[in-house]
Structures are given as C-alpha cells and as structure tokens.
Image (cartoon, rainbow, N blue to C red; front, side):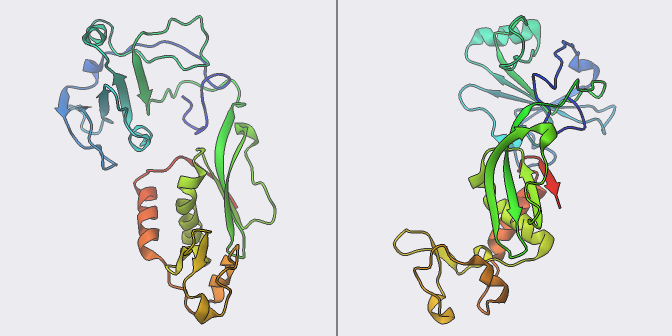
Amino acid sequence: MNDTCMYVKDGDCVKKSTKSFNLKEYYDRCEQEISYNNINRRSDLKFSSSIDPNKEPLYLEIYVTHASDSTKLHSGNKIIEAKIEKEEDIDKIIENGFIESPKQNISEEAEAPSLNISFYGFKNSGYSPIKHSSNIRISRYMLYSSGKFICKQEHCKCNELHKSRSDTLYEFCFHSTQAFELRNIAKWLGYKRFKIENCQMCINYVDSYNGTGKICRRYSQLNIPRTEHPLNTSRAKTCTLFVLNEKEMKECLQKVDNKEIPPITEFN
C-alpha cells in the first residue's frame, strides 16, 4: 500500500506481489486480551518486542461469526484478522501461516487461499502506485458562511477529488459512504474550525411532536411558526435563546480524537 494515498485500493493503484515474513524475527512476546494502544478495544492476541519496545505491535483477531468492527480494523494498527470455521482451518494456519485472502478485483490467475484472512494497517514503503485512477465513494460535508451545511454521498475518481463549489466556506470528504452516521461528526468539525452557530447545534433543536421533522422547542418565545419546514437553521447566529449542545459536541469530537472516523480530505 502506498504511504501517501489514503484512497489507494486494489486494481489500478496496486500491483500484486507475494512476500513472506517470519513473525518470530520481529516479535518475541505474545499477550492475550490486551487493549490496543490508541483505541478502547481489546485484541485477541498482541505481539510485541521486548528487545525493541518502540517497535509497532501486531494484533491478531480471530472470529467465528462476528468480525471486528470498523473502528478497530481501521485504527491504523497492524492487524491480522482470521475467520475460523472448523478445526481444519487451524491446521492450515499452522502449516502455511497467515496468507491474506485476495480482493475481488485481483486477477483470477492468482491462487486464492481457502481461508478468510485479512491484513489491516500494513504498508509497503518500497512500492509506488502505477497510476491513481481508482473509483472511490465518499461522503462530502459542505459548510456555508450562513452556517448552513450539507452532507451528501458521492463517487468520483480519486485523482479528481476537489472542492465542489466556489461559494462554500469549507468542505471535506470522508472516505466512507455512511453520510447519515457521519453527519453529526462533520457538523461539529465545522463548528470547531469556524465557530459558526447553527440551530442543529442547539439543545432546543428537537424532534417535532408529530414526527414530521425537527422544530425549535422555543418557537413561541422566538415568535416563529411551529410548523416552519424546513427550519431556518441559520438564525442561530443571532438567536438569544441559543444554547450549545456541549454534550453532543464532546461525544462527537471524542470519536475524532480516538480516530474512530474514516480518513478526511479537506478543501478551504
């Protein structure tokens, strides 16, 4: 994998080659149920070096039915995840070691291991991509000077990723298709950078009584229609009853600090 490109993937950007490593040459300690260094998750096995304590550890995850969550697998740690369905699978690992399963767009000529084994966080600094033209799917966050923002799903070529509109104050793209789940995180990242208040950041911005959308529960005091749809969320900048939802902000930004979000490309 190329160190400089967060979007590199199999196919156009990756040349397949096979390498083998003896883990005993790099690690001499193995611990069970040890927490990861940078996230609140436990590993099945953690390999480290007593000779070189600064050497980046290796984590091994083994599962039967439930694979590790995305936060763990994309935390930046070196992880080998193996699915074990029967005792024969263990025998194959003992005999052949951990062989990464090929991705779908690897040439069919490659011999596919019979086990479901994936590697995460491993980098090959000696490899340079042939070209960057892989199709990627993203969730784009767009912030305007009014305080209004949009988070939507898109796809494009990785070397064509750029700011989409000249009138936006700030944009960034998550390397993920989960726009709905990332919307709140994007909202608070934008607020952290520009401090522009929006009704969606206020504790008075709540679900409507009849389930038709969001309303301001202080609508009568602010003399705005209860049924206003969509709500003009940019009025928060001058609203005397605006109260920042600090609890939600803290929770979302903590996920950023814990690296529980996909990679981001920013555009000013």
